Image 1 (tube, one colour):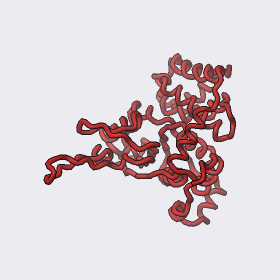
Image 2 (cartoon, one colour):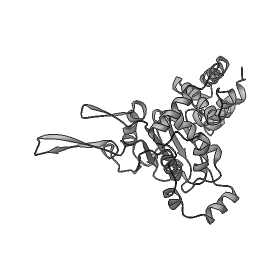
Image 3 (cartoon, one colour):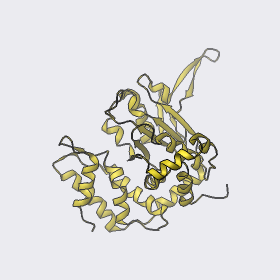
Image 4 (cartoon, one colour):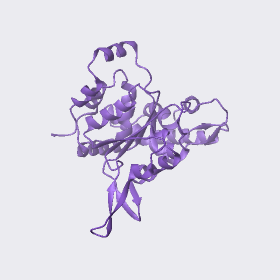
Length: 305
């Protein structure tokens, strides 16, 4: 591979698989360039798994899929130590979490115990089992899909788990023209198989490093701080945004500016990523008020410095 592909080329390739969802694709790419994990919540059949597969394929990453079910055990995710009689010792057999991009499909169909198996991996990028700590590949991403919580057989994700995801996005139903093109196009699985990788792990790391040095000015950081602190002062919000959320806003704004070819992040970048970063972290004291609505209220209240 001659060098890292441009973010524009990556988005164009993704758009050939997930049709008509350019804003969501841009957010998904910004999430990975900001070294974050991605949560995709939507009804079945709108392309959540397809998007995860396309990201892995285009970015040239080692990919493993874990189908989360109610009977899945933590060892099915992390791995297991097997006793070898001949050597009189234990051999660790890594689980599917030891991959560069892990799709946690239908994460909320597993029990809380199994969901929590991902916590250390997502935060520390390592797995500790049987007293030994094993590093995960670099780069390492979790892309998780969720079904709506009102569907049968789902378990709510605890707030500590949700906070590990830098962004949560929804794809929604396609527009009529895009759905017509989808019906006329070849099978998505065939299109995915024919997708040419534009990067490899080293190329992606290089893009992440470039995104991380995008300029952030003092007024931009003041704006992020004002949003975070306002979320903590509003009585209708049970828990305000954490310092981790503030850092996520800065990194995601830098990544979005980098994707669009700018050397510096602007307040509008923060506004465009804010709902994806804040909505799943905000819990209202008033039943019926969503995190999305709270995020929109915060954007409407806090002025740009």
